[in-house]
Image 1: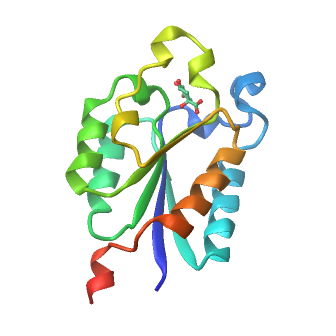
Image 2: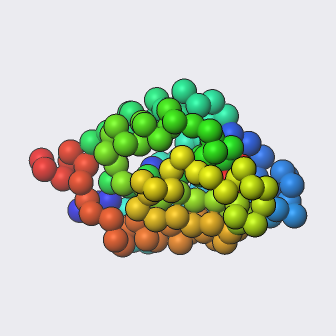
Image 3: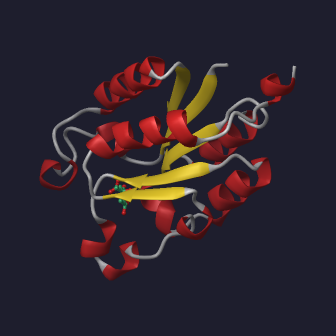
Length: 153
Ligand SMILES: O=C1C[C@@](O)(C(=O)O)C[C@@H](O)[C@@H]1O
């Protein structure tokens, strides 16, 4: 069966590649998304990606994934440190997720050390740069269970 993965990126991650490159590197988000799709395909999985600067749009996308997606990889950006709404959406749809940060948030400002997601994440990837996305896709493709509605058809 084909596993289905959803990659979500929160605010300002559309600026990857040009935004504070000493922290986030030079790779753009479209490049990251293409690589993730290729890695997923190499493991017989499909990957859809979505980026938004808006909290409600991310909540809507998570809700739309209910029953259709086997695993979510999410870099919530600054919403990591603020968003009860995105946390609740992830818990509400019951889809296991990986929390990912390009930078090592624990080596940065103290307020970046707290996450509304970490205690509920299946795994956390922090500080590996954009390479972390590849690791996350590989992990979901290889180790998450297939559990979308389509699995029971
Ligand atoms: O926007 C971001 C990106 C980030 O999630 C990361 O990928 O390292 C870390 C967050 O603290 C920050 O607000």
